[in-house]
Length: 288
Image (cartoon, rainbow, N blue to C red; front, side, top):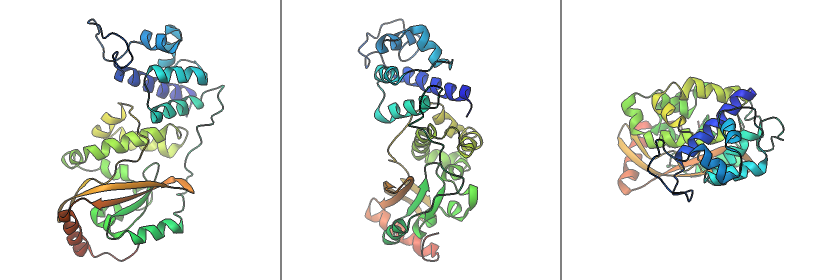
């Protein structure tokens, strides 16, 4: 990604974070003449110990190259969480004069291989729906139960087999029913994106999928980031009714770009509905 675009991404994140930071949380008086939410640029600059003009230029995407110490001071002034702080440093690491240590050129064009050990784990979690996906939400592998819950997604191949793409194509009513899931996925993708700004596949997902879907675009433009993959399956509409799952997810130790998700039915009724769904679906055995 060209330098100007990276600076714009950094400035946007700083501005949205500043607007979310309340004066009370920053230890400042709220005052009665505030016309905009959050902190003023002057206040962030004062809290971080930098000049207000310098900070304004940083937010505006001008050619400012902050040091690690200054970034830390700004992160503290904005009250950034650990994942938000990491996101800030990843964005700044691609600027001139920085070593890029927290960045990277992203996933390769070829999908990473799913280790045999992960396939073995998935074969043991039946009948719970389970899948393996990448940081950019490409679906690499899923079991029969997951395919029964998301048959259209499981049937896709190639670049189309992407969870974000799948949800972006749902009609507005169906997508609204999954808003919590969509919001979490977009925020998690936003966090991962800061380390993949130069990857054309990631940029295409933003331009062709997220920004073209009104709900996804709304959450994307808030520039909220999540670190933990604490989302995925929740309430899923299926052919036999709505089934509610508790998501359990983890990254693969030897392949940190891979995520494994397992959905555990929350109640006895959910277990029964899942059994009915699997009986009706009757797919071939094994991962897809």
